[in-house]
Amino acid sequence: MAKTETTLNVNSISRISAGTVIKGEILSPCDIRIDGTFEGKLQSKGRVVIGETAEVRTGTVIYQGVTLGGTGKDEGKRHPTLGDNVMIGAGAKVLGPFRIGDNSKIAAGAVVLEEIPPDSTAVGIPARVVRRKGERTAPCNDMDQVHIPDPVAQELRRLEEKLAALETELAEIKNTKKRK
Image 1: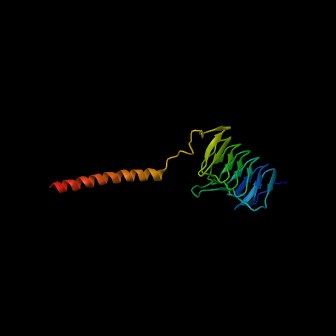
Image 2: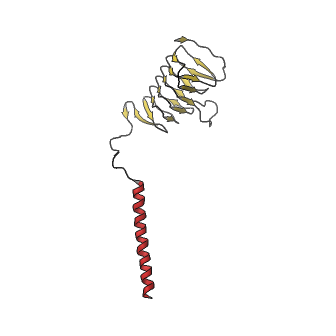
Image 3: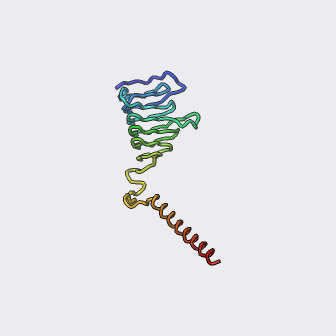
């Protein structure tokens, strides 16, 4: 544990609060201001990229391979703010100038492109909230994983019906010509 509060470049500072645990080597284009006590492994195989306007609050855990970055579309504050007690899973990308609410969890590999409310769990690409305050946000029970539609079979059936209709039409045209 290192106790520090130093800053070298006042114009571009990533701010990391006390109690933050980063499991990976930190790569940042700017100086990082650490308030209070910082606990972290700074030398491991996975790298953590923190954008220059990112803010990380107290009690946050960031695993290896995480990017707290920008989209290149914003000016001024371009990087995310992580609330208190946030957990960011390995390989997740949090991109843009929005807030991840207190006590939220971002799943490994998720790509977060918009604000996540407090006490939420977000998963996927792009990330969507699947839990809020311990309750599922969308019921998963009604999704039938076995009897899902087969788009290829549906298209083949449609083509077979069209072919049958065309063959019938052609046969009628031939019969009309024979009668003349």
